[in-house]
Amino acid sequence: MCRQGEIDIIAKDMDEYVFIEVKTRSSACYGRPSEAVNSFKKKHILKCTKYYMYLNKLENEFIRFDVIEVYLFNHKYKINHLKQIDIN
Image 1: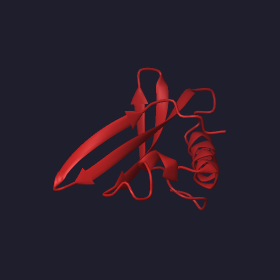
Image 2: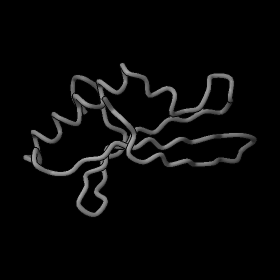
Image 3: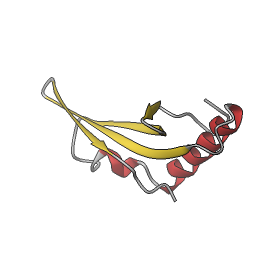
Image 4: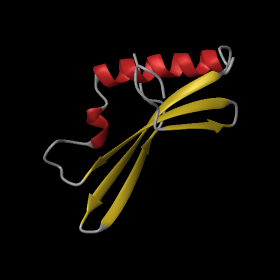
């Protein structure tokens, strides 16, 4: 967590650090969960990622940005993992 926001999940997948945004929807009225990761949110994710990488001396590591969509309907859930989203 930093002043610009937070990263929901930070993981490591082989040689990549993965920064993951998790979005949940219980209705399709507002679109897909990943659509909530707009340009404003992406800027915050990127700033937090840069800060995390700087603090942990990881500037030369490979990174990836993912979104995990969680759909909640009738007490059931479905998860969709979108890998390598465009953050720019």
